[in-house]
Image 1 (cartoon, helix red, strand yellow):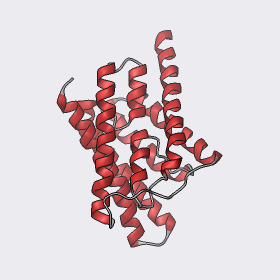
Image 2 (cartoon, helix red, strand yellow; image 1 turned 60 degrees about the vertical axis):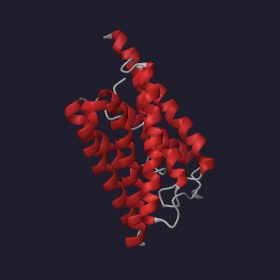
Image 3 (spheres, helix red, strand yellow; image 1 turned 45 degrees about the vertical axis):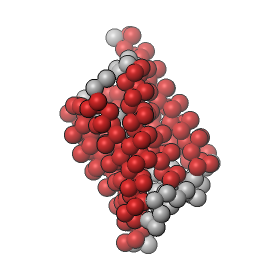
Image 4 (cartoon, helix red, strand yellow; image 1 turned 135 degrees about the horizontal axis):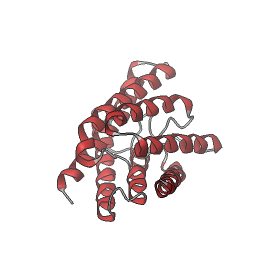
Length: 213
């Protein structure tokens, strides 16, 4: 597998997490209005994601998400070797991005989050956010993906109570920060499980659709 694909996934995922966590820190410092802070966080995340997809789509496919890579594997869009390489690069990049954001804004490079995200509403929200993201990731073409996926994430920040993690690497790495966008490590397993199940469901739907065409 070409190293440029792995570098693209690592750098892209790291940059995505810098934008998510960094903008969360900055918004918290600038305003006490939670709605404004969420708007800032969502806008920065969506705009950064749009740029990253536009830049890296032609290199690695711009997954930046183990759930996307899993769905791609299940629909035979990538090989098993590429899947493992992508996932490793994504997790490394995600953790590195969070640590860099912590260095910029926090008193500690590594602090475990104490923000519990649990309950039926959170799980339903993550299911909806991830299903929508995966549907777009598998159906959108190169000309529209860089616009549609960020728009979905922007909207899902507001219409899901979980604020749309929709990404196992993002979820795990955000347990390593005391930013408002963090998540307690105890909440991570169920979030990741829901995300992977959503990826499997979407992949099965697309695989069946392909067999009938």
